[in-house]
Image (cartoon, rainbow, N blue to C red):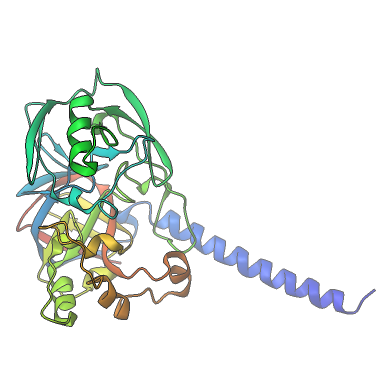
Length: 337
């Protein structure tokens, strides 16, 4: 027998034990994190809600509201449901403002089951929502297939003309929350707080995105040549103020108002969308603020860094532990673990 075999076997067992230990730790962590009540020992006030935004159409302009219901799939205010509409191409793959930045200038209003779209230098359009009688289609968001209702040729022609200056190429689909179940997420070892059920439907990942004004103010202090960005460059659904810059990175359970409890899923890794001025739809030629963020906001954890690469972090992605109504000026409480 080769004398090296016992050493190799022992090394293999050691690696196996380490792998098993890591897997067991991840498993136990995920069990603990299923409910905030198991971890939170008290709540500490850390700020207030300064803005609430609902983005009815993914990659289009948001609507600022004073209050909203935090539901499993996102924020709801009357007929407004966050990211319940999606623009897709002829192959039913979603279109987004990273490639088509003028999408950010499309304004939407919804009233009485009718949708109005407006955009610069374009005649507005009004059309009905047809979730029951509309054609059901399968669309893809980041490779995941989702069933939705087509909003018809009138909306498709308007969007195609605005985005492509052609009669075809874009269609609008709708998925009301009453028909929704979340896109299942694939758990990753470098995202221990994420669960399979934490996904949204048309959102990139989770239903909620929180950012503090202090974090953006600190970023602005680092930008050169007098450049300045707003929180809307990052499209948060919940904006807070009254904390320290980047303090939200450490928050794991967040209560807003009397009932709504959110759970941290991951830091929000930023992309080229942040370099587009939400007021003009023009990309910054120097890729700011992304370039500055990369200087000091890259992931420090080696495993997370391998997972997201050179994407800097700003703001946090949240899932919902307990539904409730949130309002501007509500105190934001952070769970003490």
